[in-house]
Image 1: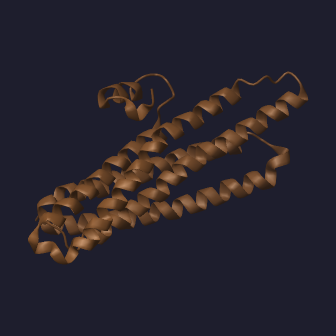
Image 2 (image 1 turned 90 degrees about the horizontal axis):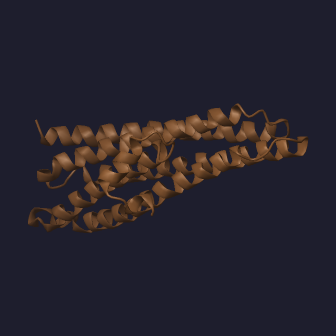
Length: 219
C-alpha cells in the first residue's frame, strides 16, 4: 500500500517508529500538501462571496493551481520513500573486489542524487505554493485568514524540511570519497546547496509577507 493511501493515524505511527522510512522528505511533502489544501480552500470560499467578484478569476486560477500542486506533493511522498529504499538497497551491495567497491560507491552516489532531487522538487514547489498564497493575501475573504496563515506556515515548514533533507543527502555524498567523480560530485553538491538555499530564502520572505497580511486581518 502506498503511504498516501494510509490513514493519518497509520502514517503518524510509521513516522514514530524506528524504521528509517518514511522520514523528513515524505513528511515535508505531506506538510506542503496540507498547505496547498488550505490555499485552495481560501480561494474557493472567497470566490463564493459577492464582495470579491473582482477577484473571481484569480481565485479560480489559484484554487486549480493549488489543487494541482497538492497532487504533486502527494506523489512525492511515496517517491521520496522509494528513493531512500533504493539507497538502502545500494548499501547492501557486495564490496569484496575493487570492481565491486567501485560499483558500490557509484550506486550510492546515483541513489543519493535521486534522494536529493526529490526534496529539491518539494522545495521548488513550496515556493510556487507560497507565490499563490502571496497573490491571494492582499485581498481575500478574511473569514479564512487563519487558514491562509496556517497555509503559509505549513509551506514554510515544508520548505525547511525539504532543505534539511537536501543538506543531509549532500553531506552523505561528500563522505563517499569518489575519486573518479570529484568534479561531478563537487558541481552537484555546490550547485544543489546554493540553489536550495536561494529557494529557502525566497520561501521565508514570501511566508513572512503572507503572515503579515494575515495578522492585519486578525489584530
